[in-house]
Image (tube, rainbow, N blue to C red; front, side, top):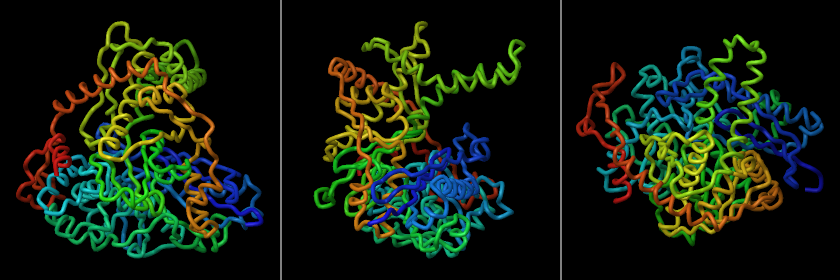
Length: 595
């Protein structure tokens, strides 16, 4: 590559999409652009009290076009556009959608334009809790353990639980739904002009970690597994997929329509997509047996190991182990926390309530001043809380918290669980509560490391990626203290988008392997936090109390009642034997751990 060539990485997050234009020779970020989803940011189609979080495909499409065109314009327009060789995307997941046979999300059809069930079901949508419990209970009836490669427990955050919930809830969507497609698979299909969903290239990343696909099964579990769970799923596997692809492969070339819309050539290669945390681990230059922690609203913890060393090891309670899901040729393992930055954002919203709801009607200041004041305080709350919390002396009996504010992703998925704060007194102020919340998220992270170590997969190092890792020395230092391990922070704040760019360069043939792209385009590490040995012992004692309190809360958590199919009005299929028995989250967990 004698002259500069460029690739584009597109990173779809929970609140926005970011595109980066990258020099494929050295990884230089030439331009970047962010688009906040307008419908999502208005709260449209979401009911947080019911754990319903849906996103309209138009948010994705508008953001895709806007950010790529903006990057090209910032970088020099047509002169740069002609040197772009590849595009790859990462997305949140599992974030699937109902599509017709042409692969069009139903929400893009006029009759479904305002129907949340026809939209993408965001990763943190937990409306399928009961369906996940049924899948866990149902799996015990089969000689083959179809959950063995996803940690032994199926989550409501994943593909099949969401599909079953939507099909049961909405008869119109059920009748129009030909197939069920992950966000990371649909965007490459869109860019390449796909018009037959049967020909869509599905990512091994999404298929293996969320959809129960495994080479050992010859693909997906058989139709009988799903049809006997609920007749609405009968025949559905035949409209899904059998083959999967790693992200170093091409999904196709940019279609004429999208080439014209973006100002690019139809020679541009579009890579197979993947989840954000998996590509983020690549952008953050993951190393074997080093846990790469992508820390944002939630966390995704990624680990790779040579397949030949990994052997037939099975790690219970994680989000799956899939060959090639992160780096082709290596075993990819995923874990994570359902709420990380979201926990801090929840506390911030509580503190902002008086300003947001009372200042607008103030008799002392005008509306413009009130709005400016809210914005200023909103931007300063977390940094100022961090400074104050850092000054609080650590003791064994400080306030405690449990970090399950959006359920528990790993270890041992259980989305019924709730967060908690204990040890409160009249002296408990905002910095003390914030400190307890940060500590709880660090303890939750330690539980994941402990699980890997306990089950024969050694964690030899920690890599911090993402906005929280870059912006909060307070949280990262506590993470190092709690883990009693150093944590390196990657230089780039956009590791997911950069990882997508690395895969774009590989899919376009600029590099033979993604490892070569990582070496040439990686930006390296510029921060490292080391454990404070004066605090390590106290955190170990507090971690034990966190474990005990979490165990108490889990035992006393409310069971996830299974609704009989006959109870579902109009849309429900006939009730089946064995589906009326309540299954508690603890029972499903035990089933996964003891098989």
